[in-house]
Image (tube, rainbow, N blue to C red; front, side):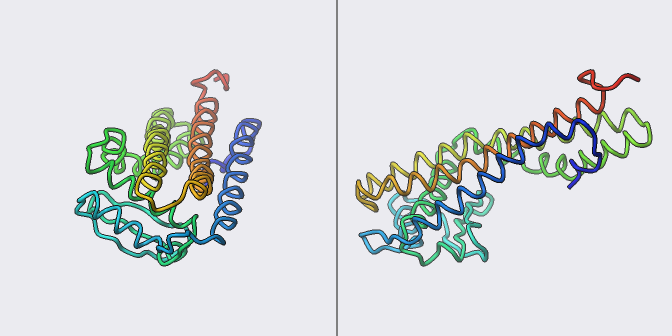
Length: 232
Protein backbone atom coordinates (compact mmCIF):
# COMPACT_ATOMS: atom_id res chain seq x y z
CA UNK A 1 0.00 0.00 0.00
CA UNK A 2 2.93 2.36 0.57
CA UNK A 3 3.23 3.51 -3.06
CA UNK A 4 -0.14 5.20 -2.58
CA UNK A 5 0.64 7.09 0.65
CA UNK A 6 1.16 10.33 -1.24
CA UNK A 7 -1.34 11.39 -3.89
CA UNK A 8 0.10 13.79 -6.41
CA UNK A 9 0.74 14.13 -10.14
CA UNK A 10 3.38 11.38 -10.04
CA UNK A 11 0.61 8.86 -9.34
CA UNK A 12 -0.12 8.86 -13.06
CA UNK A 13 3.12 6.94 -13.54
CA UNK A 14 1.60 3.96 -11.77
CA UNK A 15 -1.48 3.72 -13.98
CA UNK A 16 0.16 1.65 -16.77
CA UNK A 17 1.52 -0.75 -14.15
CA UNK A 18 -1.84 -1.08 -12.45
CA UNK A 19 -3.59 -1.72 -15.76
CA UNK A 20 -1.00 -4.29 -16.78
CA UNK A 21 -1.21 -6.03 -13.41
CA UNK A 22 -5.01 -6.20 -13.59
CA UNK A 23 -4.90 -7.54 -17.13
CA UNK A 24 -2.26 -10.13 -16.22
CA UNK A 25 -4.27 -11.41 -13.27
CA UNK A 26 -7.38 -11.66 -15.40
CA UNK A 27 -5.45 -13.42 -18.15
CA UNK A 28 -3.96 -16.11 -15.90
CA UNK A 29 -7.29 -16.76 -14.19
CA UNK A 30 -9.15 -17.10 -17.49
CA UNK A 31 -6.45 -19.17 -19.15
CA UNK A 32 -6.01 -21.53 -16.21
CA UNK A 33 -9.78 -21.93 -15.83
CA UNK A 34 -10.13 -22.69 -19.53
CA UNK A 35 -7.49 -25.41 -19.69
CA UNK A 36 -8.30 -26.73 -16.24
CA UNK A 37 -11.39 -28.22 -17.88
CA UNK A 38 -9.40 -30.46 -20.23
CA UNK A 39 -7.74 -33.59 -18.85
CA UNK A 40 -4.51 -34.91 -20.32
CA UNK A 41 -4.92 -37.99 -22.50
CA UNK A 42 -2.27 -39.77 -20.44
CA UNK A 43 -4.61 -39.75 -17.44
CA UNK A 44 -1.75 -38.73 -15.16
CA UNK A 45 -2.29 -36.30 -12.32
CA UNK A 46 -0.13 -33.22 -11.92
CA UNK A 47 1.57 -34.56 -8.79
CA UNK A 48 2.36 -37.88 -10.49
CA UNK A 49 3.82 -35.99 -13.46
CA UNK A 50 5.98 -33.93 -11.11
CA UNK A 51 7.15 -37.05 -9.25
CA UNK A 52 7.98 -38.85 -12.48
CA UNK A 53 9.91 -35.89 -13.85
CA UNK A 54 11.89 -35.62 -10.62
CA UNK A 55 12.59 -39.36 -10.52
CA UNK A 56 13.69 -39.48 -14.15
CA UNK A 57 16.02 -36.59 -13.49
CA UNK A 58 17.44 -38.26 -10.40
CA UNK A 59 16.83 -35.17 -8.30
CA UNK A 60 16.67 -35.31 -4.46
CA UNK A 61 13.44 -33.33 -4.40
CA UNK A 62 10.39 -33.95 -2.22
CA UNK A 63 6.88 -33.35 -3.56
CA UNK A 64 4.67 -31.58 -1.05
CA UNK A 65 1.27 -29.97 -0.90
CA UNK A 66 0.42 -26.40 0.04
CA UNK A 67 -2.99 -24.85 0.58
CA UNK A 68 -4.36 -22.24 -1.76
CA UNK A 69 -5.07 -21.72 -5.42
CA UNK A 70 -2.11 -21.52 -7.82
CA UNK A 71 0.31 -21.19 -4.90
CA UNK A 72 2.65 -23.81 -6.41
CA UNK A 73 6.33 -23.20 -5.82
CA UNK A 74 9.76 -24.78 -5.65
CA UNK A 75 11.79 -24.04 -2.52
CA UNK A 76 15.53 -24.44 -3.19
CA UNK A 77 16.33 -24.13 0.52
CA UNK A 78 14.88 -27.54 1.35
CA UNK A 79 14.54 -28.86 -2.21
CA UNK A 80 10.77 -29.20 -2.00
CA UNK A 81 8.32 -28.86 -4.85
CA UNK A 82 5.07 -27.68 -3.30
CA UNK A 83 1.84 -28.10 -5.22
CA UNK A 84 -1.36 -26.23 -4.44
CA UNK A 85 -4.80 -27.68 -3.81
CA UNK A 86 -5.87 -26.55 -7.29
CA UNK A 87 -3.18 -28.58 -9.05
CA UNK A 88 -2.09 -31.45 -6.80
CA UNK A 89 -4.44 -34.25 -7.89
CA UNK A 90 -5.69 -32.58 -11.03
CA UNK A 91 -5.39 -34.28 -14.42
CA UNK A 92 -5.92 -31.05 -16.31
CA UNK A 93 -3.58 -29.65 -18.94
CA UNK A 94 -3.29 -26.46 -16.89
CA UNK A 95 -2.25 -28.25 -13.70
CA UNK A 96 0.26 -30.47 -15.48
CA UNK A 97 1.81 -27.41 -17.13
CA UNK A 98 2.23 -25.77 -13.74
CA UNK A 99 3.71 -28.95 -12.25
CA UNK A 100 6.28 -29.15 -15.04
CA UNK A 101 7.14 -25.48 -14.55
CA UNK A 102 7.97 -26.05 -10.88
CA UNK A 103 9.98 -29.12 -11.85
CA UNK A 104 11.83 -26.82 -14.22
CA UNK A 105 12.91 -24.78 -11.21
CA UNK A 106 14.17 -27.97 -9.55
CA UNK A 107 16.36 -28.68 -12.58
CA UNK A 108 17.60 -25.09 -12.55
CA UNK A 109 18.67 -25.59 -8.96
CA UNK A 110 20.31 -28.95 -9.59
CA UNK A 111 22.24 -27.60 -12.58
CA UNK A 112 23.35 -24.43 -10.86
CA UNK A 113 21.41 -22.10 -13.13
CA UNK A 114 23.03 -18.77 -12.27
CA UNK A 115 19.96 -16.48 -12.37
CA UNK A 116 18.16 -18.78 -9.90
CA UNK A 117 21.17 -18.89 -7.58
CA UNK A 118 21.46 -15.11 -7.74
CA UNK A 119 17.76 -14.60 -7.03
CA UNK A 120 17.79 -17.10 -4.15
CA UNK A 121 20.76 -15.41 -2.49
CA UNK A 122 19.12 -12.03 -3.06
CA UNK A 123 15.89 -12.93 -1.23
CA UNK A 124 16.89 -11.62 2.25
CA UNK A 125 18.08 -8.31 0.80
CA UNK A 126 14.96 -7.98 -1.35
CA UNK A 127 12.67 -8.69 1.61
CA UNK A 128 14.52 -6.11 3.67
CA UNK A 129 14.19 -3.54 0.92
CA UNK A 130 10.53 -4.35 0.32
CA UNK A 131 9.66 -3.94 4.00
CA UNK A 132 11.68 -0.82 4.81
CA UNK A 133 12.21 1.00 1.52
CA UNK A 134 8.84 2.69 1.13
CA UNK A 135 8.23 3.52 4.84
CA UNK A 136 11.73 4.94 5.20
CA UNK A 137 11.32 7.02 2.04
CA UNK A 138 8.01 8.62 3.02
CA UNK A 139 9.03 9.21 6.64
CA UNK A 140 12.13 10.95 5.38
CA UNK A 141 10.14 12.93 2.81
CA UNK A 142 7.51 14.11 5.30
CA UNK A 143 10.02 14.97 8.02
CA UNK A 144 12.60 16.47 5.72
CA UNK A 145 15.32 13.93 6.42
CA UNK A 146 17.16 13.64 3.14
CA UNK A 147 19.29 10.73 4.26
CA UNK A 148 16.18 8.65 4.98
CA UNK A 149 14.77 9.52 1.57
CA UNK A 150 17.93 8.40 -0.18
CA UNK A 151 18.22 5.22 1.90
CA UNK A 152 14.57 4.47 1.14
CA UNK A 153 15.27 4.71 -2.57
CA UNK A 154 18.31 2.46 -2.27
CA UNK A 155 16.48 -0.16 -0.19
CA UNK A 156 13.44 -0.19 -2.45
CA UNK A 157 15.79 -0.64 -5.41
CA UNK A 158 16.71 -4.02 -3.96
CA UNK A 159 13.09 -5.15 -4.26
CA UNK A 160 12.93 -3.80 -7.81
CA UNK A 161 16.08 -5.68 -8.76
CA UNK A 162 14.62 -8.87 -7.32
CA UNK A 163 11.58 -8.49 -9.56
CA UNK A 164 13.81 -8.06 -12.59
CA UNK A 165 15.95 -11.06 -11.64
CA UNK A 166 12.80 -13.15 -11.39
CA UNK A 167 11.97 -12.75 -15.09
CA UNK A 168 14.73 -14.89 -16.66
CA UNK A 169 14.23 -17.52 -13.95
CA UNK A 170 10.52 -17.87 -14.68
CA UNK A 171 10.83 -17.76 -18.47
CA UNK A 172 13.57 -20.36 -18.41
CA UNK A 173 11.54 -22.65 -16.13
CA UNK A 174 8.61 -22.44 -18.53
CA UNK A 175 10.81 -23.26 -21.51
CA UNK A 176 12.19 -26.26 -19.65
CA UNK A 177 8.65 -27.33 -18.73
CA UNK A 178 7.42 -27.37 -22.32
CA UNK A 179 10.48 -29.32 -23.43
CA UNK A 180 10.07 -31.83 -20.59
CA UNK A 181 6.37 -32.34 -21.27
CA UNK A 182 7.03 -32.90 -24.96
CA UNK A 183 10.16 -35.03 -24.77
CA UNK A 184 8.85 -37.06 -21.83
CA UNK A 185 5.56 -37.86 -23.53
CA UNK A 186 3.48 -36.43 -20.71
CA UNK A 187 1.41 -34.41 -23.18
CA UNK A 188 0.71 -35.00 -26.84
CA UNK A 189 1.72 -32.56 -29.57
CA UNK A 190 -1.90 -31.34 -29.65
CA UNK A 191 -1.91 -30.71 -25.88
CA UNK A 192 1.40 -28.86 -25.65
CA UNK A 193 -0.01 -25.51 -26.91
CA UNK A 194 -2.50 -25.47 -24.03
CA UNK A 195 0.25 -25.88 -21.44
CA UNK A 196 2.30 -23.22 -23.20
CA UNK A 197 -0.60 -20.76 -23.07
CA UNK A 198 -1.04 -21.34 -19.34
CA UNK A 199 2.65 -20.77 -18.64
CA UNK A 200 2.80 -17.72 -20.90
CA UNK A 201 -0.17 -16.24 -19.08
CA UNK A 202 1.51 -16.88 -15.74
CA UNK A 203 4.68 -15.20 -17.00
CA UNK A 204 2.77 -11.98 -17.57
CA UNK A 205 2.07 -11.69 -13.84
CA UNK A 206 5.83 -11.55 -13.23
CA UNK A 207 6.30 -9.02 -16.00
CA UNK A 208 3.53 -6.86 -14.55
CA UNK A 209 5.04 -7.06 -11.08
CA UNK A 210 8.45 -6.01 -12.38
CA UNK A 211 6.97 -3.14 -14.40
CA UNK A 212 5.01 -1.91 -11.39
CA UNK A 213 8.12 -2.01 -9.22
CA UNK A 214 10.16 -0.06 -11.78
CA UNK A 215 7.45 2.57 -12.17
CA UNK A 216 7.19 2.91 -8.38
CA UNK A 217 10.94 3.42 -8.18
CA UNK A 218 10.82 6.09 -10.88
CA UNK A 219 8.08 7.81 -8.89
CA UNK A 220 10.23 7.77 -5.76
CA UNK A 221 13.15 9.23 -7.69
CA UNK A 222 10.95 12.06 -8.95
CA UNK A 223 9.48 12.76 -5.51
CA UNK A 224 12.95 12.78 -4.00
CA UNK A 225 14.19 15.25 -6.59
CA UNK A 226 16.81 12.84 -7.85
CA UNK A 227 15.18 13.00 -11.29
CA UNK A 228 14.50 16.72 -11.13
CA UNK A 229 10.90 16.29 -10.01
CA UNK A 230 11.15 18.77 -7.15
CA UNK A 231 12.70 22.19 -6.74
CA UNK A 232 14.15 22.56 -3.22
